[in-house]
Image (cartoon, rainbow, N blue to C red; front, top):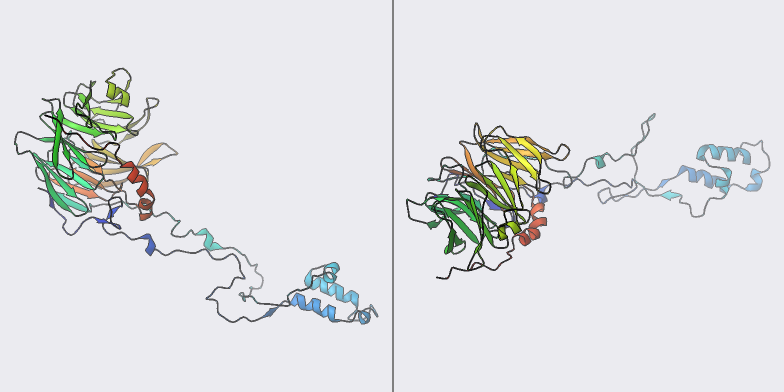
Length: 468
């Protein structure tokens, strides 16, 4: 049974709901201070600048008024007098830097007294620079926060009886924040919001082992694969058994759902079957192009391609029409690093060419991606047990190692939460750990909540039970 190793720690949803990010303790961006850009108008007087308005005269305007008040006839009597018109004109030009035409044709209504804020006196020999240095420092709402990586899990749970097998996929995280874990012949669910574990299904047979778990896209159904070659379908909310599919004889270690109701799974003999769970006669196709166990299976690119990985170090890519019609002609074969290769390779499905290869120098057990940070997280269980975080660079079109989290033992399966922030990983021999690996701010989830709801909407109404 699942038991909490860290009872004092629990997930906490920011504002409630299933589509927002669960965090332990988050500082809201509302509490952050915001640096406001100062006004560019130097004559602006704010509310905190005082309430006294002392008039300040303009010396240039007083000189001009002095000229206008003088009698023109007296000024024109002699050019040798101290206040002769010629000397006054020269003096005014020297003081004001204006032509005589400007002095005689200045507009009416010139302000003799103005109300302005007294600036600091200019130091002799220096030049005033009107530069807003504050504008060079962006406000906190614009400035991007520094990326912080975790070193320890936010929560750790005991998981006794966990299968120690590299090919098993016995953990999955649903879109409704429900984590399913297989322990021996039992399936447990863990609610990350309430930190409550529940026994979901007990097969009550020592001869049966659970080899794979997979939630549907909306989290309403759970497919449970067994080592006897059958996969059982349950309703998540009521834990009701609906029907079963299978090939018999070979264990089923991988399964995947498409949004249109297609369930594909692969067995140890390299066989892949696809069923439409909406129909009574559900069988659609059976494909066998692998010579070893199918250990990885996933619908990608909006359910347009089905990608299968096998222990024979071959990855096959099928189109949706290939899977439904069982046409063995139009598929691509891609070779990637195997168990001991220590690399992660990226292929372009449009051209069939390898784009880049990341050398991990370790056995890679699982991979998750984050589009927001453009990062990749890999779990390793070879020479060193750890979780590595790789940052993608668009300039070099390659991944660079940015962070490493050491694990107590080798990591098996790693899954990502529906909120795109947490990862859960099974650590041998009996631990389930949660890491806040891709933490994002509240604004990210507010902007994407509607898009997330549309993504999780079902395209089919439900599953028809088998008629006996």
